[in-house]
Every structure is written in structure tokens, then in C-alpha cells.
Image 1 (tube, rainbow, N blue to C red):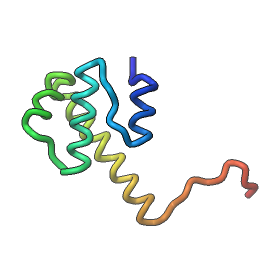
Image 2: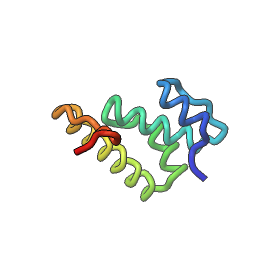
Image 3: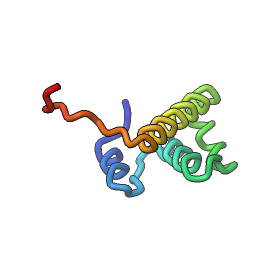
Length: 88
């Protein structure tokens, strides 16, 4: 199923998406909170747990943490994507 294009575009633009599915909203709030504060509030945690189950919450937490780790390493060492048109 996956996220719809307007949701992806809103996130890419730095806007809060409009959700038609409470599960997507729960995941968005959970990811936003753990990225900003390194923890989730009780209500947010309960909502994402209801949406994904414990295994899903563990997986999304690991995924967000891994993404944050990669972003930190890339930014710290100023690693830029290679130009696909550049000749080596």
C-alpha cells in the first residue's frame, strides 16, 4: 500500500501532511517525536503501538535510528552524492 504522493510531497516540503488514515498519522507523529526529542510521548506511543504492534514499533524505531545515524555521518564528513554524469 504505502504512503500516497501528497503525503510524501508534504513531508518533502517540510509541511505536516493531511492523513486520511489514523495509522499513517500515528507513525508520522511517532517518527517526528523521536527525531526531535529522542523519545515518544505516552499517547503517541500508545497510538503507534495500536497501529503497528510491538514488532512494528521496534522496526520503525530501528529504521528511523539508522536513517539518523547515516544522515549524521554523511553530514559530519560532508559526503556528497556522486554526480552520475561525471566521468571517472
